[in-house]
Amino acid sequence: QVQLVESGGGLVQPGGSLRLSCAASGRIIRVNAMGWYRQASGKERELVAVITSDGSTNTADSVKGRFTISRDFAKNTVDLQMNSLKSEDTALYYCNAELKTSWFSASEFWGQGTQVTVSS
Image (cartoon, rainbow, N blue to C red; front, side, top):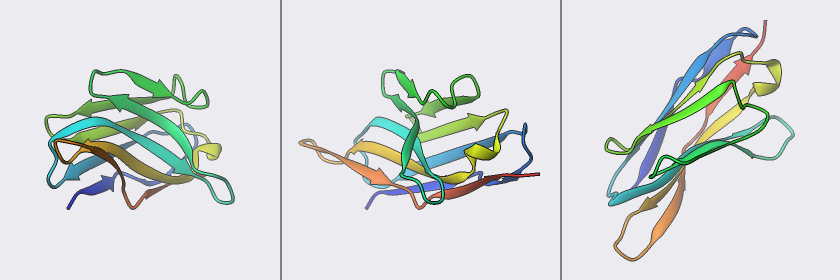
């Protein structure tokens, strides 16, 4: 059974930094992509950033230049370095992964979420 475990959320002042980490465990043949989504109170879940096995990234315009995604797919991990945080970055952040768990198919998995609160 595959699990995604996030860490690194918390409370930070505006302009501060946080680093989120996500580790996938279980029967994983290959990581196709891993990334982060977020959902603020009363809003829909949105993509923050994703990185594929070849290193390609897709980052939301709202966080470009402030957030950086990185991965170590040998360890099945993905990190999100968040700098210059703003109050509007406050949300529940979810790790997402597309994992090849059999030779014939890949599946999508979600973590439980980690809260990021930006407030003075």
